[in-house]
Image (cartoon, rainbow, N blue to C red; front, side, top):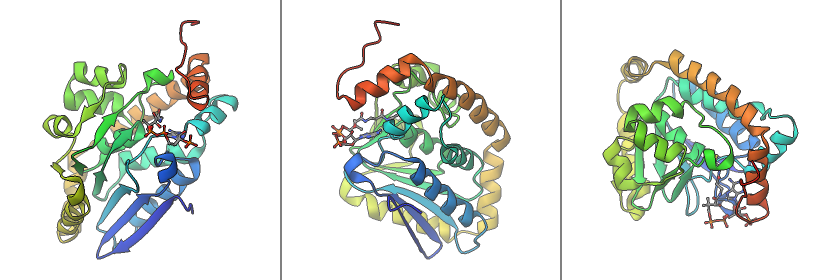
Length: 255
Ligand code: COA
């Protein structure tokens, strides 16, 4: 349980809402735990036909909590188990996943979208994956899924150079199914989810399984995790996290 994730279930739709708006919905280990618990339970619950991920406030998600990353670096690079649970669940999830995104989606806020079956973006959505600027590497199989979707050049621009992708570009690139005005996001997401919930669930899940090679995705996640753990312990990453905490620009000139 985490007060920072709101869980709501109605009419076949399980909605998981990130609820830490004062920290821009940055994800803590407890939040990953709550998300994973709810998603795992939903896999075995016939009453859940579709899982929706949302974020409260002006921003979908600011990515992993950087304080947690700094603490993980201090522990020798091992992040808590729940982030791994969450990422591997995303990669192997049987039931359809829908996301509704307003404002920024940073890091895992963006990479989780690569595992969603329908992504609805508000007009102000802005996707960024600033892993390299943090001394890190991509996660959640994004090192393979993103280039597959947008090509190497654009994926490198996002994953390594930290370039942002706006809502229109994301839709054009195939990262989102639709872009709607901010005021219409709730309604659009609810409509997409209700539509999926009304379909025959066995056929939906079988179709999703045919469309995704979960085993290959999991192998990429494991490969990335190993390097990610090593990068977390690097002096480069420590400088990046410390700079964020101290509200200053990082200085990588010493490396
Ligand atoms: N981890 C921990 N705290 C975070 C956070 C994160 N990933 N993202 C935002 N916060 C906190 C800020 O420290 C700030 O806390 P404070 O009010 O106690 O000072 C609060 O959330 C609001 O953030 P702020 O930076 O003031 O909001 P903003 O609208 O100016 O900028 C972001 C929003 C997301 C662009 C900016 O916060 C940011 O770059 N965050 C880091 C994103 C990141 O690198 N994530 C990891 C990706 S792997």
